[in-house]
Every structure is written in structure tokens, then in C-alpha cells.
Length: 121
Image 1 (cartoon, one colour):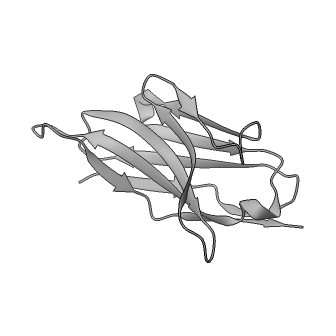
Image 2 (spheres, rainbow, N blue to C red):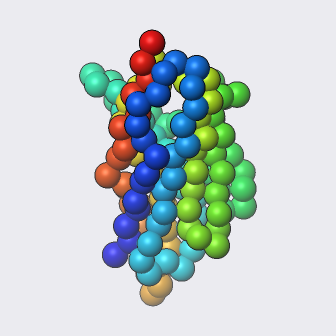
């Protein structure tokens, strides 16, 4: 089994910065892509950032220019650097990965347990 372990969440003032980490461990052949999602109280889970193993990234307009996703393929780890944080960024942030494991021929999806990010005004 594969596990995703997140770290770096916490309390920060508006305008501040935070860096989240997510490390995938277990029997991994390859990672197709990893992503960060978030879910605020009363709202549906939404995509925050995505990165492929080749380094391609994508962001929604709500975080573009403020958040940066990066990865370390050798460590099976993805990061989310969050700058200029706003109160509306407050949510539980979840790590997601689409992972190939041999001898399976199709990838499986995995979720982390989530880490709380709270931005105060």
C-alpha cells in the first residue's frame, strides 16, 4: 500500500507564507502526477495545483501567481509554496497522487489525511 503524508500546515496571518509538503511512500513504480486540493467548511473540495512527473503545472485563477507547486521525483515528494495568503485560503489541504504499482497495469489514486491551513485577518 502507498501512503501520502502531509506536513507544514498551521496558523498564519494574512499576507504571510506557508510551505506544505507531501511525501509518498510504499511500493511505487512511478507517479503520473500529484496535486493539492482543499476543502473549506460548507464547500466542495477544489483543485489548488497539479504537477506531472515531467514538471508541467497548472493552477486555478484563485491562486495563480500566489501559489507554486514543485516536486522532487527522487524523493516522491511534492511541495506547495503559498505566498500572500488570504483568509479565504483557510481550508483543509489534501495531497493527491495517481500512482503506478507493478504488476498492476492501471494506476491507483491515493489521498493524504489532510493538513489544516488557517489564515487570520
